[in-house]
Every structure is written in C-alpha cells, then in structure tokens.
Image (tube, rainbow, N blue to C red):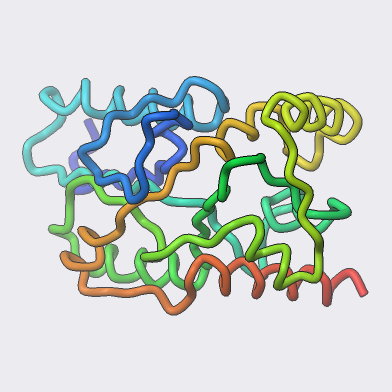
Amino acid sequence: EIKSVKRIIFAGSVSAYGAKKSNKLYLKENAPLKADTLKYGINKKLMEEEINRLKPSIRKDINILLLRICTIVGPTERNGGAVEAFLSLPCGFSIIGHDCPVQFIHEEDLLRIFDKIINQPKFSGTYNVSPRKYTTIKEISKNLDKFVIYIPYSILYALFFIIFRIKPSLGISENSVSYLAYPIIVDNSSIKKDLKIDSKYNSLSAFIECAKSIQKIKK
C-alpha cells in the first residue's frame, strides 16, 4: 500500500444501474446495480463491486467516495459524444409508448461538485451526481428544431444496429435502445443535501448549451 494515499474517488456512472423494465423515476443510491447491456455500464458496475469487495482489506484511514454520474455534456464534449451524435441525426428518434426521459449534467456543474469534494477530504460514501430534473427526446428535438419519429422498439433496435455498423464513431449502438425504453433517471437529493450544492443547469439547458457550442465550432 502507498501510505500517502488518504482517499479513493471513483468516477462511476448511473449506467451501472442498468436499463431495466422495473426502473422507476429517480433511483436512489440503494437501488441494485443491474447493468448487462452496454459495456460501459457493465464495466462501471464491475468496478464498483470490486471496490466494495476489497473494502475490508483497505486501510481504515482511507476514505472511499463512489460517484454515479449521469451523462456529461458541455463545450468540451469528446468527439462522438451524446450531443454530437444527436446533432448528426436528421431527427429525434423515440419509442412508441415511451417518453424517453434522459438526464444530463453540464461539465461546469460537475467541476463545481468536484471542487467541493476535493476541499472536503472527509466527504465519503456513494452518491448519484445529476441535475434534479430530466428532459425528454421530444423536448430536446423541439429546442433544436428537429421533428421526432416514434418507432417500435424492435425497428429502432434494427436501425441503430445498422447505424453503428456504418458509422461506429457516433457511438449509437443497438444496445442504446434499451436505455431509451427503460431509462435511468436518478435522485440527486443526497449529494445536494450533504455537499450543499445545486446545479446551475438542468438537463435540457445543459444539452442545448453543448449543442450550440458544437454548432458554433462547425460553422
């Protein structure tokens, strides 16, 4: 062990909860981790499980903080991120019979949270990191002047399968469809209360702000 290490901060993901039909809106931190479709979510789930498995053998003076972060967006979004992928599509795609709620946290809000965390060395535990509210594919499409096509789950799955094979850089695989049908919307009340911080951006404004930045760069 490295004696100088006093803290472990794991930047996990809400995708570790998994896209499940049983998902309710505003999952709390005590909800089970069930990711089994997207590799990213499975990876985050396994890493959390490994940290928890090793806890008994870790020095007692080391604080462990597990953060389950929703999708991050902002002016410096990576190539092929959620916003760029959405902008590349001719319209919004939604599933018949589903509102397709989604949550996004602006990178500025996330940096403010990390700044507070770093300045509070005793802050530990497991926390969801997200804005309080969610947005929907319909709402995002409206704000970006896109129309929405409502498609059955099976057809949208096939469409995303084809898109991913033609242009994998977009990161829109067929497994993404399960996250639209059975969304992961988390409750951020614990970190808001314990860290005494709130988001400047909501899910919609964070997404739109990022979209405008990308569009400006590409002009």
